[in-house]
Image (cartoon, rainbow, N blue to C red):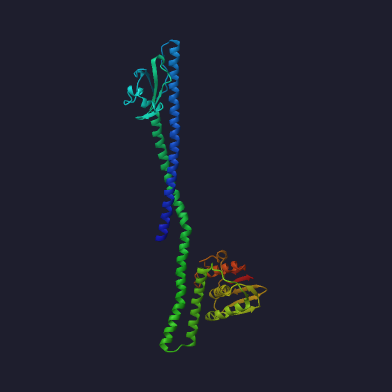
Amino acid sequence: MNDLEKKSFYSFLGLYIISSLLFLAGIGYWYYTAQKNAFQNETYYKLQHISDVIAGDIIMAHMQGKPLHESKVPEGIHLALIDTEGKVVKGSLVVPELDEKDLLNKDLMKKEGYFMQNGYTIFISDAPKDHLNIAYVVAQSNSLGKELTLLRSRVLKVLLWAACFVVLIAWVLSKLFMKPVHQRVAQIERFINDITHELNTPITSLSMSTKLALKQGECTSKMLNNISISTKQLYDIYRSLTYLNFSNKKEIAEALDMKETLEKSVAYYCALAEIKRISFDVKLESTLFSIPEAQATLLFGNLIGNAIKYSSPKSKIEIVLKDNVLIIKDEGIGIEEAQQKKIFDKFKRGTEYSGGFGVGLSIVKSICDEYNIRIVLNSVFGEYTEFRLYF
């Protein structure tokens, strides 16, 4: 990957990981809060229940005139019975800071009988109503603190494993995300290299011809022909690049005689064909079709230029326009069957033979689609290639 691809890769990876971790943190916090509230409610009702049971025993013992018997208390719960003078008459207070005077303190009572202190959950009930001279039942438990500590540990472990999984998924998705980007960048880099190579040939020919003409002090017909051919090659590249850059710009269609436009295109490419001693077999009849002349010229130019480029020397190119169908057939290298489905893709070349930068046929397909021209490819590798355009 180049620097730009690496920057995009790590930007996507970082964004995905950060957003996912924030989402996981939110889920973890929500789950922990929900479970914490559930544990707190469970502890509250458990302490309230045992306090009510003990208060009930106190009231029953007082009414029956019997001594208070030892009640069975669930494991983890500590009870303390406080008389009307604030003294612990049974059990113990497990929180050192909670002395007997605190139990009669009005501020303490404002805690609505349920609070946490020093890791203990404390529930104070005045349900005995001074029976047997008992004012309060204090139920104390540290199980909630232990459960919350265990819950935090479990949530953190799950979040840690989830974070590792998210990082792995993020890495895989980033790779998948960058794959088409990498392919596109590779196509563009290849396109730049190819177009640089394509520009080199006509520019070199122009430079050599002009230097030779200046040296000799005259310009021969061969020099002029080389200059003309090189100029046409440069102009073809320019037209293709212009179409790629401004293809969204709509041009006004006009009724054209395809015969006249084709004759101009054939005449334009005759000099290029003569270099390889390729002949044209042209049979045209008048065919009216509504299309901008620039688009029609670009359409025919790419097809004829490709036919010349991929034809064998001393071969023939057949161009027939009849019954609203244009046939352009060469006797060139042909296109492999596996490549024929991809040949109209941008930056795609059917072969490395004769160079090119892979946009000619994509432009042809784009123009055909825009003006509802059906295009059909028929090719046999090593024998010929034929394009049919149905207007």
